[in-house]
Image (cartoon, rainbow, N blue to C red; front, side, top):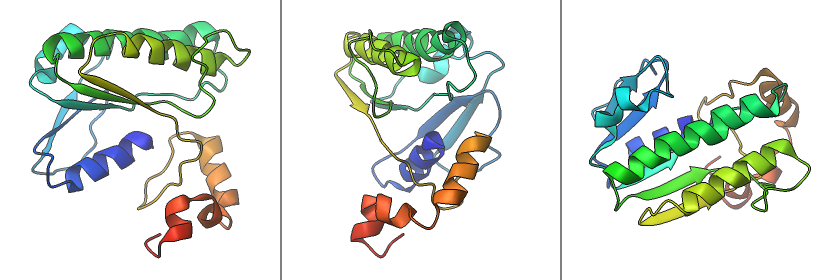
Length: 180
């Protein structure tokens, strides 16, 4: 859901000339700025490495819900894959700015009781030490789906439906603007 929103805003931005999206399935979307790289295995970074060169910025929005996952599986998808892709990005684009979309409650001490928070904290720490020209961590506490964007996680979709009447009060943009 975050990636969908970031993609939408990047395509709308006048100062963004090209957007490359790497994923396992096609977005089924056509836009002059958009180039999709569909790969069967995201862990096989060498297979799509050529598509990652020549960029000055990356919004790293890869993420899955930890609900129902073992720690080992969550570490593999979140930390291992994140480090593999980011290591390639910094090697190919040393002047790149990397922005990682993490989450409120992320534990950069890596020792807390909440598994997902420790894993994301470990990834944040690794990303900060990789040598990008600049590295930013975004830790949203609540994300309001807009413009038809939907979460892939069923329980989150149900939560957003239940919270719909109060979402405008939770969303800063909605509370301060008539745009929502």
